Length: 397
Image (cartoon, rainbow, N blue to C red; front, side, top):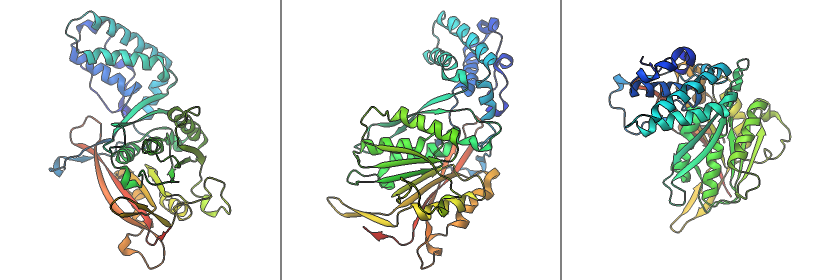
């Protein structure tokens, strides 16, 4: 029996999809490895659309722009199966029988046995409640950073009755932005000589971008930095707080001040006196995968007008003075199913060349980032737009 790996939205129950336990010895190692990959799609899936393609895409005719990373299509099926006690128990029995069989064989790839063993731990552990815990590792090239920036995150199941519970999941755009911060922190204004830095994350969700930023800032010795991660929904905020605490334990002196707060994009611009820490502007604002309704860009602009600082800071290096302008870094997927929503960014924010002579927020730069869709379909990619948005006029401190 050969398992055809499908998209999670098409996943069948393990009790139906897997070969019978008694027939395990009759399967080839390749077929058994496919079974393990199938179970991993349920109990420890990768974040789809997050593997960046570095080399240029030469043959555009062979590229397929996928729309299959929408906010609810491929996650709910895996969530439902992961939380199914019967299917989990069946998967545990099947994996235990597989490990017992593989342990008696010679010349079995060690990775195959390790993968099966690790899945047993996942099925018996956090995944038993439908919860998914992942370890992320982003390469860092800066001399003052460790080789990788490592983050451990927990996703909680989507609420099938609440479309907005998507913030409880980690999405590809957050991986793309966190990776960019780890690779080149200076381009985000994260440099050792900068003090009292204030960083805000909008729509933080599981907190990947903000937590990765906190680890970069900590490693660079920017001990006066304050990071504020925000979201709107209580269930998302509760999980966000837990993720922050697991990466920055309260009883450890990490040197990073990290807060989590509720932020209502629609109401905030009208608040007369916002409560701390949202009562002062921020030097850097970050956002990933946060535009999926037509009104979001307008609401975000209203928040930025109050929360993005209008003052640049000058740093003195050995060779020159470096001026760092406050910037909003935004990564959004370019998917057909949300084309109208994502296009509102360039409707709401003019480019620098289109800006009038009055102070306003403008698009200072835009890049396209291409990632493998992670669907198993050859040539299927996801494109992200990376915007840098700032004031067309800033004051020096």
